[in-house]
Image 1: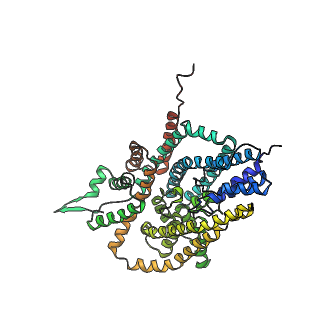
Image 2 (image 1 turned 45 degrees about the vertical axis):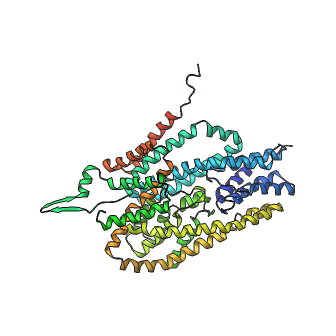
Image 3 (image 1 turned 120 degrees about the vertical axis):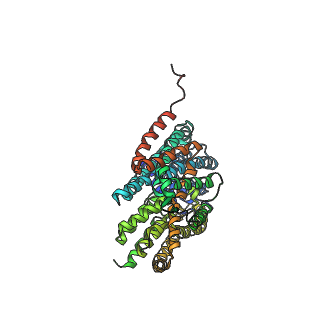
Length: 269
Length: 257
């Protein structure tokens, strides 16, 4: 008789991952223990013999690291593979681990770009905009929108991984749709980041040149040409240091402190 | 509510919003929601009863750290500690909210130190989990994903409370003796620091330099047309939909019929 995982078990496995994916992160295994934790309901339903349970736990305790929110798709794939294995398919420990490792790299890349790099900043930028006019409604908006949205797609992706397996995911990653989506969202993200920079990076120059009754103020001149020129230049320099010069965030932060010191000492800022 | 209780509540929230804390809907509801400075500042405002100042701080530091992501859990600044502790300290010590970005720097680094420590300690639990796996103990393995939270709680809650409890008086004293030129310098730094968060994000999402143009458009829409961010975001959604439609066309046009 073939074993089939119930929807309830799959949900248990997903919700375990959703809550506890970061709970035991360590330098050695990353999310390995959390992955095994999310497999506990699956293993319990599929295997009865002590040695099978032990082997299954051991193969999921190895190093695992993924952007956890879209990474739930890997847990779905692993659940499907365990089910096939329990039904006698020729799937060894290596095969399951190879699939997990093959997925975690690209998925982390996509997840960091799409979720941490785009979705979160866009929602936060909108929330900041709302906060400026409606106060506490801004944080409340983010507080509801982000977790709700993420819980939905994370569960959907788990089921997707379970239903289509590795092949289904590779199809999605290979057909260009995902690249277009990433691209389109980064366009939205960039536009919003531009607006955010203009709003929140503030630098005005107190520099004045006085000659008799005539006062020349640098900021007045700048305002007539382009109001946010100084902030724009600063973002440009920071971006250049990070992306072209490959400096670390801490290094750039130190640079800003020194730059501001020189600029204030010279009365430019 | 007595002040000590308020500080305990804030320190507790700083634990709940820390990276890895599972109790409030995992990483999603915790670090990525409770741990965002804007959300944190609203909660601090609620507890301390000064929403306007708290939100003023929250908006500044959220803009500053909007681009901080943690790829592979490598964290340059701990936004959770920054959100709760900086906001609370600014509100309590009545210092100028414009100085918040500067205060956020040491607070954020303390958070990173704690995270690096947890990162090492948790190796112990992984090895313990291996032992349970050996004997096929499902409960044992699951518990090794829960026990690390005891360590996480102690290392997050205690320092947060200590910083809040002693930091307040220290800062009040500091603010009273700070000379004007230093005050001006720190304000300038605070105004420039958001460029770092945004620069980090640009570094991550820009694949070709031509995309910098889109960033520039967003910037100019606000500088010249004074549009609110929400309006720019709505334009962006329209633009992104078209972008997706035109770049995701199937490339088999001449194949069919």
